[in-house]
Image (cartoon, rainbow, N blue to C red):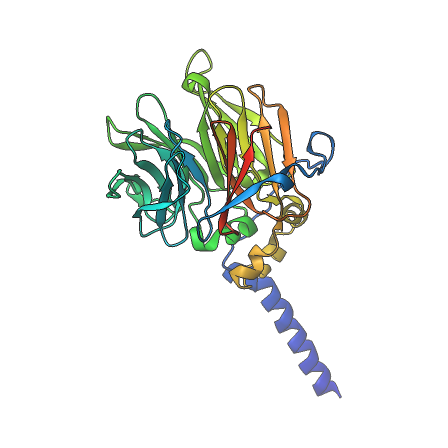
Length: 353
């Protein structure tokens, strides 16, 4: 009897030791972080069915984002690296080229081509013939891990996000379970060919857009549900503040309409991530699970908002039925909003309200 008791006690000690030690070997070296206030879908974020009226344009697997040029030619990109375009007035999509990576954020180059934030290949340019050149794929001799979105100022400088220095595109969920906040806003200057860090320590740096007259640049911090502003001109040049925070969703891409509204896509709600923020050991243990199970922890939403120049919500568009869900990008083009999603095979289309 004493022998059996010793065996049981020994097994218990070993089990406790393993449970204690396992997080140190976990894929996600989880750290403690504090979730910002989250009031949920109330007030200006009250549930509604405004997105239930959108129509769909089938294009292929996971059109994460849509770009629009001055002639209202549309561009989108798919899993597998393919980039498509559709000219105004033409219902057909045609292939432009293939990055052989995972193109995410897209911006027109003004000549029928694109600047591309490719999560795998880095910062790219694809010309009107589909030829791809690499603009930047490293900083200070270190490879960029996860280039996500971009915008270009009137001097040709490219502001772009590096979502994580820890995990690549195939491991997105691990970055959220770890919470190490290694995302960055970077800037490439074509005059010097140098990439520099503008903002660091972001919890998954995501959408990027310049404000009116390039006075400031905004970058979405997906993990903490907020948007940062970095002033580029005037008396406040170099200063950083929060443009909008305490969002109930996870802000992905952001686009300025050129007048008075920033459109923000929120593919999921924050609640499930916030709930486990105080439990780094639990998050580390959970990170041993397959990636697809970790991704399932996100609560998908059909949710976009419009924000004015003062950081106030002016548009709240949702669909509680989630027919077109996990919206990752919203692009104004003419009088229309074009919506991208990583979990559909179509682009959503909606008149600007």
